[in-house]
Length: 324
Picture 1 (tube, rainbow, N blue to C red):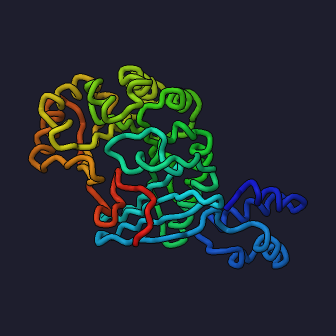
Picture 2: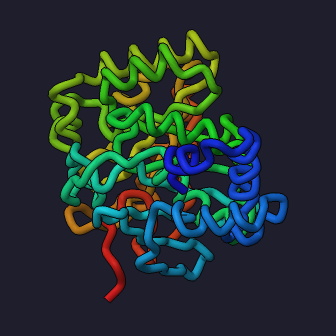
Picture 3: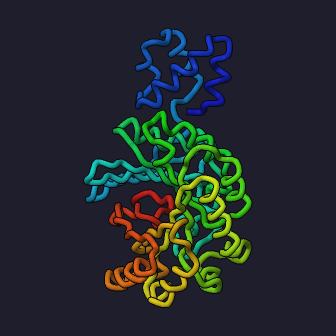
């Protein structure tokens, strides 16, 4: 829902009308017709003048593990993907796009290989979450693209997620290390939103090969900013590390990562590589050895459970392509 347009159409109405419409929407209403505490005439006006979503549903795919991937299109034709992941413990986690495509071209990530369209508005980010909220309760959120390039819209959308059932402490904003936005996030965002750093290599040369942004904003500067986040917020920073077979999964690379990270500040999340064509994934044995080395050096470490791989909905696979 375009909240700015809604506000414009409700001018002249009592101010609480805006709150009523949003409360119904956040609870999962499927349209204005369900909003029974609004006059029928107003519901008709809104139905005619404010589309209930800023996004058009194009395609939906369902994985064998219950994961759902949705392809949307914006009003000006840009593709946008979002994912709902269901876990056995009852968690319902969503992955939202902050951009159509991504301009930072990380070599292992399908999203980064898409043509960059534009940043999404706060309403377009929220409408991805609302699509899933209309089907069931949701309680965790993370994102794709580079949110630090679209920080104002990302924070505006995140500020409303608690109304959908996703608290700030269960909302994670992940960055490859876009330093200007990261500094703003540390200095300006007061809500207890989690921070994650997409790292993937501790060695500068290799990280630059995998993630060209490293040439512009070297890792030591980015890590220092993450430490400042911890000092100000007293909340750990998650490190995302995708495991690429024969590329970044050797024991000496685990030791380099351990030397880089302060265990009081960082927690590492090892991500089994989800094939996108350029690399092969690390073996389970290599991942286990890498994890053991980090843990042996005192670094809190987990291995991410892969969801939605069979529909290309897993981490790094999203490329906004409809099924044939």
